Image (cartoon, rainbow, N blue to C red):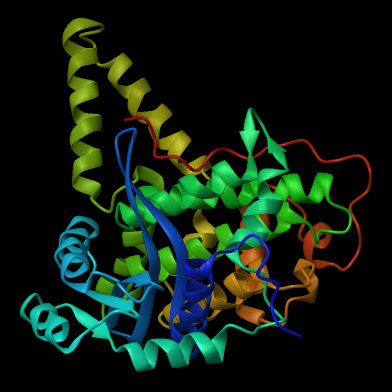
Length: 368
């Protein structure tokens, strides 16, 4: 059975086909990543392709897709080179029906790759029929119908994707951890069983968490275990992996309190003890332990791909039905962080009508 194309145009069909193609090559792929500057929408990235070719290598490629005979390959090459620089991608690819031989030479001068028309057509023909997967348009249509606070799930997911174009850092990871836990609780309380649009959004955020943790751990693959732990602990508590910067802010706060508030030093001591207590109470230790494991990158990458697949599967599976052990591990850690009993999500039983109170702390950076 062919995938339904209702509500999806030719460009969307081509993007879905190429997403499947790059996924088949072993990459993690996102569609429709928005690019904004302030409140202004600049453009969007048709495909954001994340490849983990070895424990030491991470590679980000952006793909611009035009399913038209006159794709204006020259103009697209110049435009895409600028977009590549703006989002910090390692590579860029133009995929269009309208690529001529001269366009290949011009793009090569810009170090932009061009997918030939013949290969483009073959990929679209081969991968356009997938009855096991919903398109981004299908799932976003579901998300738009589900209210979440003052907006809807689709708006939350757009903001989550926006972080990708700004570059993956600890601020983005902490944002996605918070979003994932929030969506987990919403799905637990509002979807019985957990097979609806909110659960799909939860899986999507879990995929972003897993990719971010793999990416942020790349520089410490060869470091000793304690260095890896401190890298993630500092990043998840302070929003940056620089303990010295956090110490400078704290020292400054203490010096101001001592000079202008209490010269005895009691106020400064109270600031430090309060800060250290708040830091110790953030429930990040189990996440830090897993993210800093020597082989966690490979497990996280597998989990990310499994979550993305689950988010767009034609039939949405409940968390305990997922086949990926790595994905279940990530879900378990997020339930622990969010103060949710694992049995409520991974135990195979539905949640009682009386929902648990939200006792978790937000995973934002400490306001230092």
